[in-house]
Length: 507
Picture 1 (tube, helix red, strand yellow):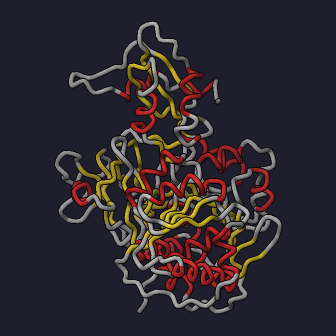
Picture 2: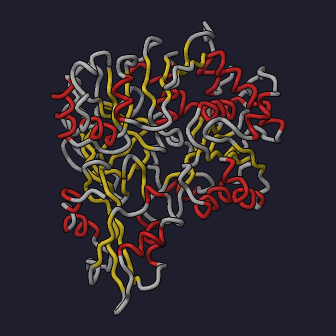
Picture 3: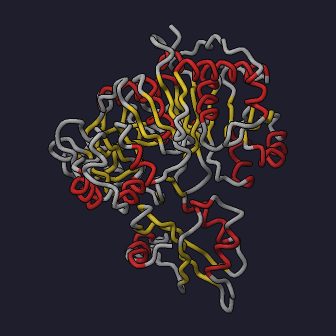
């Protein structure tokens, strides 16, 4: 049996005329349309020399052709590598060199710069714009829609998503066809998705939440999605009369709560609101329930694991908790130093195991071994506890990762750019509570004697070096960074000192 994720998503389709995607302008794409489009694109990938196991790196805006390209890559037996459209050429150079894709697909406006990067690894370049224009779709229109999906084993790679800790370079998490298929199947059951559901899809599709959770779950259930290019609070509220499910990051919910059109009545057609990718404040959970009559369902996942836990569909959705382990997933809390499992209500390191667990880090076998226990549990780096009812509570991170607006920001990367600026002695980048973004990226900088470096100069220098979401919301200058006896910067002290920074200022 072909274990390709594509085959598992679309086998036994039934009616190919069933609605798969609806656009804001009411254009409709059926399951048959989506399959045919993916077939045309798969034929072009093969014609461009993409072989099973090859990486296809994709840095394009959210669009239906982009989604079809993901499916086409699976059909061709290749490995899909999505990259945030906000990444600069400087940032892209690392990913392309590390992954060595055979093909890079980018926006037409970026083609010239990316061609020089791709040439270093012998990769071809095709273009795909936000409106569907580009060399890839032009070629696809002349291609045949029929394509025999390449057979894949359960353990073969389907995707690589880059993630990172707070030090060093990003790591490529290798996700297999079975990782993605098993997780999607579990979520369909746990969240009770059916072919009668319509998802408001307002998430990006370059990371786990928007691509593997929202998209795979919808397609596997034969449901439909209303496909938005970006999150628009007013439009989302309007669409709730035609939809049944919304998946979002906490920022979605805080911004929706700012809109007076959000009421019991406007949400009465919806059956489920799901939040993830960053901690949802308990106050947000309670305010949402009061305004709408719905309890947000919070869940917990990672790039390396997909979804691990979820609050129940029926039963208590506990504010501040990320729920129960999903069926087939084991979760435990351990002593970070010894790996010994700890009793309930004891804070420690969260570890997980299950069919959702990734295969390892791309070309980093030693790093992979270091992140796994001998019995196969993955050390998540998240600090938390399990209560007496088996609900998991995330209390912090072992590393200093900042999650801003649902996107990961790795302090070391930002610090390296700031430290290279004239007049800067050193810097520390932290996450500070932010009412809209969850955490605001904040830089604390020590400047040299008589240096003229200012907040404006730092921010201006970073705008061409880092994606916008990584650029600090504020730059604060101090005389010296707090350190412990071992000389390690005490970021917890900095976070405590500036905890109220964005209560009155929200740049």
